[in-house]
Length: 469
Ligand code: 5AD
Ligand code: SF4
Image (cartoon, rainbow, N blue to C red; front, side, top):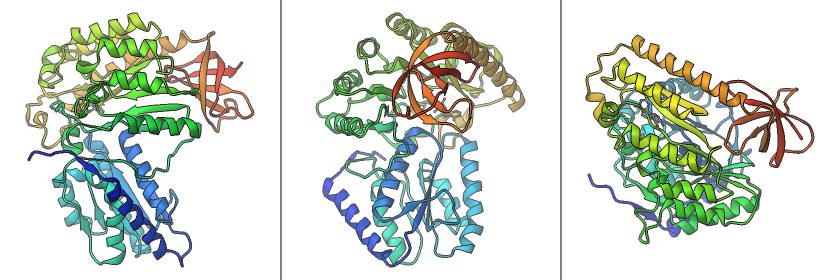
């Protein structure tokens, strides 16, 4: 079925906000009701949960982490790997006992798993304590679904066939005071053969640049210092706009916004990461000198069956180009081990990429078959034990590289953003280098939210340690 993008009108969002106000009226006589929002998966889900919290706050809810206290529980799910799905189903299953103790409680499931029909069927049949199920495309009308639950009997299952949408003006309650996410686009058109995302999040659709720039401007005015632009494939930003523009131009415009803040972005697809993007990163002082550029596998045959549409050499050429423009750039990547049919010899090409690029950190995954994707139908003769051996080799090599790269910081002074406090009495603050390496910082006083010079005194494979200068 062809899905088209629906632009949700401002009147429609205003109607949802009016529904929130009506719900708030329903609770007027009661003690302030609490909501528990639990999020699995990627930053896009975190950003979606901030909108759910925005709506819930407008409905009069406060927030709790304790499911026993919650009048409404919302679980925002992730479908990327089987492990994530099992964890969600386990936790949702356990809520049956909680709800028995609190019969008025509402349990809502949303997010990527709820776009999968076999999952929603299972919930309909076997998880009868779940009241509301809706997929990623229906988030904007969460208030009216909650209102129906509160005023009518019965469960609600929104159909996953709805078109992908873009909605502006949904309120947000952000989790952090220093770092913020800004979605610039939704969906993915790439159909990498292992990946469920194009099926759960629909086709690529870009927000209008003015909406994005206005959001960044207001975040900066509120004091946010670290702003991450989000999309499954930010490098294809703007191709679908009526006045097409590209991601590099959007970055350059964001860089013009006055104020002291950093711009980060994720995720980039190598096939769409251009020389122009790298030049723009090099020239724009607010754009952080770091790039997350997933390569997934180092062998050209595997890349082809993954439908990645780039070769190892093309990928490495881009990395060389970027390093020549920004020599101190920090690099991270996603890698899958054990794609169907990948031999150990082919896997070793992945290790070679690590050795050549020398990533600062890596996100490593063992292939997980996803129902409905082409890879799930492919022959997969390697045992899990063999895959684990390769996986451990990958992790060991990256650990060694991370440790060596971190050791090189010792003795230097870095301008870091102090982004939080920690419980560690020796290192009171957490901070990030411009390249996003974690630093545990000694010091006292009021430094959170400030850019400060930090002298790096030691390091291990996970993080750096330092003191305020
Ligand atoms: N199995 C394992 N890892 C996967 N990823 C996506 N789909 C799968 C899968 N089926 C990984 C990719 C992607 C990251 C977000 O998750 O590396 O870049
Ligand atoms: Fe999945 Fe590939 Fe799209 Fe990334 S680019 S979300 S891996 S299909």
